[in-house]
Amino acid sequence: MKKAVFFLSFLLPGLLPGQVAITGFNHLALSVSDIEASTAFYRDILGLEPIEVPDDLKAIRSWFKFGGGQDLHLLAGRTEPVADNSRTSSHYSLTIPDADAVEASRKRDSIITASSALTALGRSTSPTPTVTSSS
Image (cartoon, rainbow, N blue to C red; front, side, top):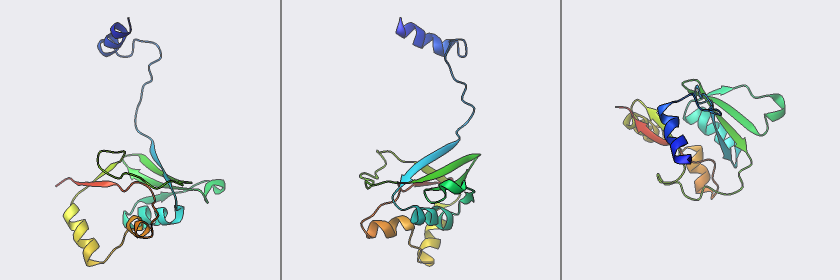
């Protein structure tokens, strides 16, 4: 019976009770160990636009516009390091116009990201995003 209902849900979308109409993706929340360093990385290195956080959350939250009407929420409180930052584990990916130009700029300006600086200190922020060039 379950197989029949599952199969019918694809044939007759919207007719089965309990379905939720998802109209978009609202935000991604990442737990980080150092809210200040993570905020600096996403604001200063990636250039994300900050969003005002309610006064009672400013010490433990940082919010950014992520593009396409979505937000990124940083949540203070991570106590465990990111154990596996490989492409086969949990991650997110960003699309940028030209990854080669960004890499050249980072090398030219000797930019050390907040993430790599904390890793060198034996600490970790959030998972480092995978960057994909659209060119």
